[in-house]
Image (cartoon, rainbow, N blue to C red; front, side, top):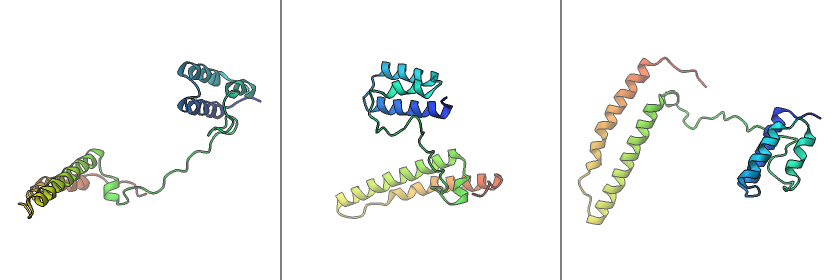
Length: 147
């Protein structure tokens, strides 16, 4: 019986797993991978796995099922989901800087034995600027498709 492209890919995946497990060195993996992609019949694939355990994660004859598509987004709010990547990165950087500054302020205050001047409040200024820019860009962009 002839093999399909899916069967060849499943064989390549099984060989990759064997290589990752340390069962094949790189030269042997490369040689077997080339043979897997040249395979025409299932009989061409069988010798590639003769010395490998049968309980591998991928069966060359029956490829692994494709993972289920993700339907739920990590960020459910549409305004955030359709925000440009650059703005998402800027918000993450700003939130990280705020978290670090709050931690430093808390540790300094604990070390002094009393609350110190709350200097992290000044980080609200760039946060407000970022909020204005985000609102302006969101207003200019057409609404994205709802998911």
